[in-house]
Amino acid sequence: RDARVVYCDNDPIVLAHAAALLRSTPEGATEYIQADARKPETILAEAGKILDFEQPIALSLLALLHFIDDEDGAAELVDKLVEQLPSGSYLVLSHTTGDFNPEGAAQARAMYKERGMTLRPRSRAELTAFFDGLELVDPGVSLSADWRPELGEVIDVPGDEPIPGYAGVARKP
Image 1 (cartoon, rainbow, N blue to C red):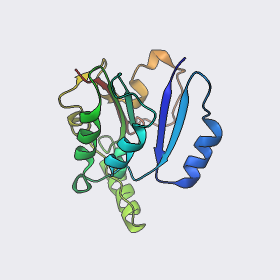
Image 2: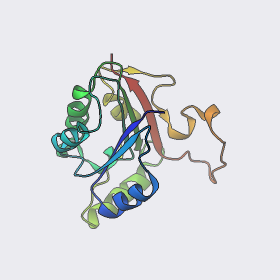
Image 3: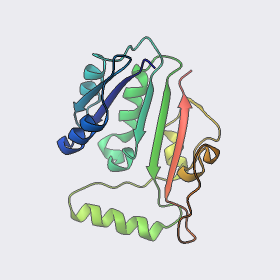
Image 4: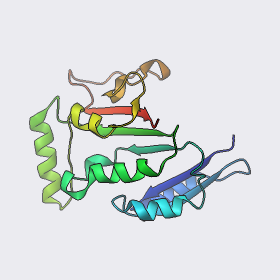
């Protein structure tokens, strides 16, 4: 199929691995951008070289927003990116949460902070807020493992706690 993919990361090693695994073909193209996700202008300028912003686009921010704190502009980042998408585009998010183990999430956040990094688990309601103004696709924001489980292989996870993450997909009207 004719697909255009823009893969963005701030880690050059991750991009090197992506470039080795994700290849362009005559039917489609893949572009790699080394950029800070908190600078959407850079991402959009580079993405515009390969994506047609007149056609619907799927924006996947998977396991990203929990590394951007509220005061660092997580909501503003999503808003700026979605604002540039044409009608009919989709936003796909996955995010870690402390809803099921607040103490464990607080410990993880402290551990990240000790190393000079950000970890910002968010509640289901907080993740849902990123989809404001968009039309959520069923089943809405749910546990990552439960989002369309009929489409994948069921994997048993040890312990009683769910995997601490939510996922959701929404369409821009």
